[in-house]
Length: 525
Ligand code: AMP
Ligand code: ZN
Image (cartoon, rainbow, N blue to C red; front, side):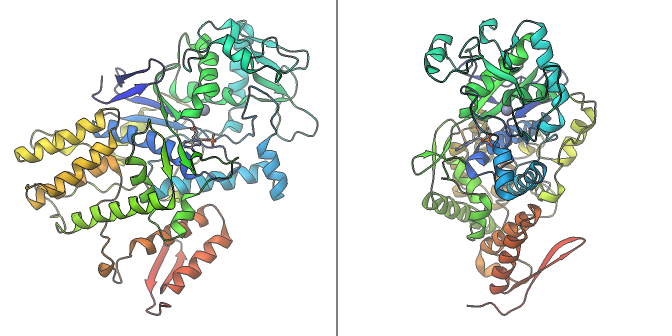
């Protein structure tokens, strides 16, 4: 048992996260669909998983993290089974192959995650590389009487054969059936049934052979199959946005439970949506922004991370240029108060925590980073504390804190453990900076807490401090946005950002060792 408590959608209560006997928590996060850019709403959901992971690491609990890449354009609304393959639509619009589309947007996703300091998952399994696992699961469900082949050649999951269907979302089958009136696929036995495998229609590019003929998998199948492959039959945490509860996670449970003998994940954690103009930020609605866009406006991408922490993850959060600007101002005021405490001594009692940067997009694994050992990923976990050394230093009994300092630290940890109460955690950080503990101890406490927060609170922000060796936040954001554009192979955008930097008097050069920059002294004023 760990001290971290999280709300479990399945039980509708806040419960401690359990660590299994080998001590490592296994976590699956529903990742991006790579036919368009990820938006800052998607990032809010990935930030939730990132803070869970950091909080567990802070408590000395290793985490094996899997985040899938949906690179086959499924029907996103399986209730109607009438959608189009968005990957193919995107490919047609951009005159590219589905693989080219997926590669570009996947690279963009990694770059976006890096901009907001999200620690890279250990495995980013791609759906298209796990079709055999999906077919195997579908065959087992057919054999166990949970699925049937329709006259039209589609394999459907029969929800009536799984008595617990609806437990996660609180839906009853009757309500679901009523909701389908007029929208029913004629070859389904029950309107609430959902597709495991669909027969390939005319002209479909992405299709695979199966015992039921050429076709493609249902969207939910990939997460059941890939979680099982990399995390084993049972794992501790499954995360996603609130829209994933139904049908995606409900269907994932229905698919996995008959095979693994119960609900696959113990803890189901769902983040509320990021809103824009009062409604859910969504690719399809067109009301979205990318993190690179805010970076290109000269905004520090970590302002988005700060904004996400100003409201608890279970509540809706409004995204606007004004809310983001307020977050950026609050973040920069925190950083300047930390900077005013002076640089930490190199070592000794008040030395800095080990440096922890989530890494540039280019350092991230793509696809499968661990071998066939799958969930017996001991080497990965053994290396985890070296890769991300973010243990709670005050938890060490030899840490000699003042009574006030210790109380502030304990309140910070209690807020995090209380279902990630980040607004309170941020308030404790501000209180720490106002408190009468010594400057050394203050800095030590705040930088320690930043291992969980990931806000780079040690970064100097004073624009006067921007000399040859330093960059202002807006300049750094432009450089980061250019790096992200390059990682996503968006060369036109990268060139435009290079020109903007040049106009600000900064020349960038790309070499084998990475990108370097220098001030030219001729900024256009
Ligand atoms: P998608 O690429 O649409 O499959 O979404 C990827 C992840 O982002 C899923 O976990 C969604 O639940 C989540 N998500 C989508 N839109 C939002 C939003 N506006 N706010 C927060 N999370 C979202
Ligand atoms: Zn999923």
